[in-house]
Image (cartoon, rainbow, N blue to C red; front, side, top):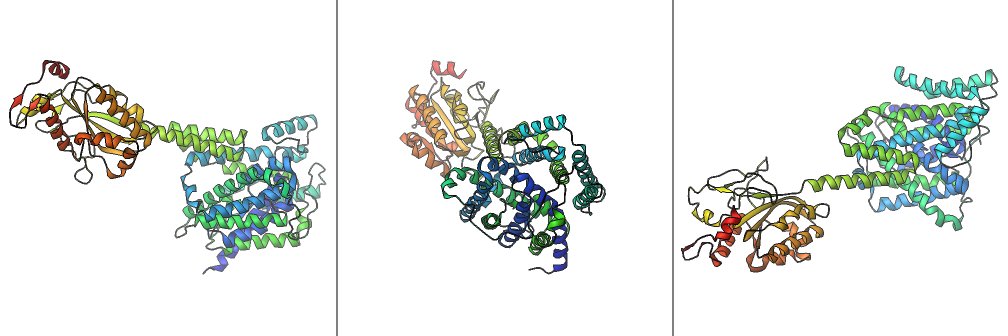
Length: 592
């Protein structure tokens, strides 16, 4: 399994020491008790290590999952939570079989950071009842429960519990900064427990009796009649487990060299772990970023480290349950408060807020939704807003510029030449425009040296527009709006070589523009349509409309040749037999 088993064993032992108070705390916070957290850490931790897609991942109960489980416990009871975990495990396996793991990489960074910050706030608020030494008030809204706990504390303060909580949290935060190699959470919890026992602190309520071992696997909690109502919470739990596990695996890859996780196998491993954990009374599990980071930093190189972590916790369950049962709940609240503080990456939040206004909006909105609503809905809102803002930014890249119809120096078909600045170079005989904006350019002034007489004859009768960027639903109508209002010319050439994509909405908008121009007697020619864009144009009939009478050309020069032929048929420009026709007075006026 590994070439350095000693390092993996040491890393696993270290992670187990760090994970013990977290497993106890998250078990208590979930509403199922400390024993549920330990069972989850042992069973899910071992199975996810074996079947998961990362060699370095450590799984177990997490703060994010606890946030989701609290309202489920309030509504459906402990049995409902176990059923949700079982269903979520099945859903994760389905996602793995559908190879959905790779899609998680598209979650924007502001959504992840806002989500993490919101979770940290919720975890901190959940600890207020235990931190203040009061019974947890009724309710499933964390802000309401926290406020009621503060009111109860104000009427009958428990300064012992508050002192223990602040002491443990302060020691953990100071230890992480001054002595990062020391497991400060264990030191703080042991110190708080000894103080409570030695000084007989009545205000330090302990965890209570724990079973000396894991319960026998059972499906006694399963109520088939309630499965339908629990499906929606199960989807939320599965989505959160997938998101947090794949994010943790990505973080682990970034902390090492030569390690790369398999996202679909990771989903499968988490599915197996969540199928098994409820059988032993465990809560739904996911990979834990903090414990995974500790695993990597202490030298883990294989799955043996995560297995060792689960084995050490199993020994504690069987051999040290009486000692663990004496740990004050306020001490665990301090552990989770410090964990919540350490979850917040101030630098990352500042960077996201300063990046762009859109990133700042997504960050704040996701964080607020996580705190006020539920976690999965917050992610959905964040993704929806991020997607809408991204579409808006992409649509803003679309533009329609008036260009010299006679200049073919920029090719209409890819592969010939490129210009980094995106401009059409000025060449002898080309037109110079006072302003390059759709429908608002000044009349062109032509250089007639070197055979420019044909261009002078056609001046004002032929105009060309280059369409750039995406022609799709988010901005097609806006981009082509002014183009449909062109008047005073006989031929419009649409240069489409720089159109990046076309969808049905864009194709319909283009077809409508061509119809409007044709209705005013203006011939529309197109050049440079890419092969990949023809399907959308053909599906709505736009390509057929452009192909009539040879209105589609491969290059701009061919399109201009077709324009001259059409002008010749109405007495403008050089005829095919070499005779010349003059520009009509009305056309001359329009050209001005």
